[in-house]
Amino acid sequence: MVDDVHRFSDILAGLAARPHPKVTVADVLDAFGDRAFGALLAVFAAPLALPMPPGVSAILGAPLIFIAFQLMIGRPTLWLPNALMKRSMQRAEFQTMAVRLAPHLQRLERHLRPRWGFLYGRVADRLIGAVCLMLAVIVFLPIPFGNMLPSFAIAAFGFGLLERDGVAGLVGAVAAALSVIILALIWNALILAAVTFVGALGDSFESLLSLF
Image (tube, rainbow, N blue to C red; front, side, top):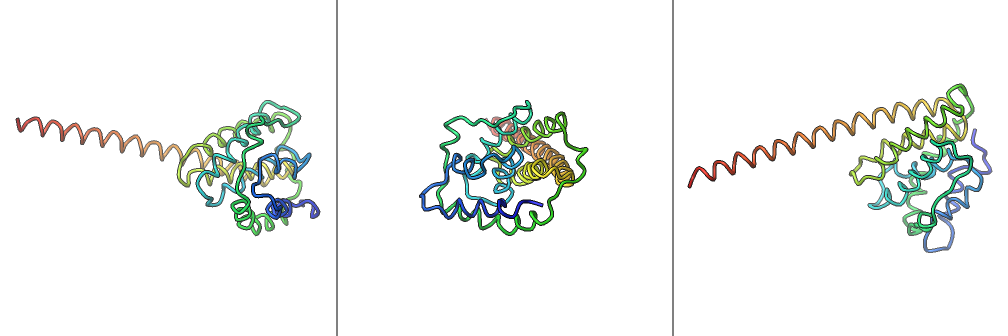
């Protein structure tokens, strides 16, 4: 179970309660200290699993790409470029996000525990990093409501890595598979719609030319 003294929900609430006008990525990293890659994946992905104001996915999605990539290549310590560290949200928006997440995180924190540890290891962790990197790119794209399920998958992987909870990792894997399937269906529908539109436009143009 997550340490009650350093629960995610409490740390987010503490960040939201700070008197500063903005909350930066650096503030979030400082607040979680030496937490593992899994913790940071969960921190940045969990908010995006819920409806959030426009632009939040760009702020939180970019760090996810860097974190997942470094997990994939097996980097032992996390590094983020200064430009990302300075990215910020208005405190009011961060507070809204923390309030929305709190009940969900608190329920989750009561159930997380180490189990099915055979699903983790040096190779498995890198594989999880690769999957999270693919999902993070999807999250970063401006697809309306298209980043919620991939974000949920990344958050599940993050919590699973943090607690070595195989059940959470399995949930992340299922959500990741569903995300890819849904995205493929959306792209196929968009391509079909575009082809149909161009065909109809061509027919209309030919009909117009036939009048002359």
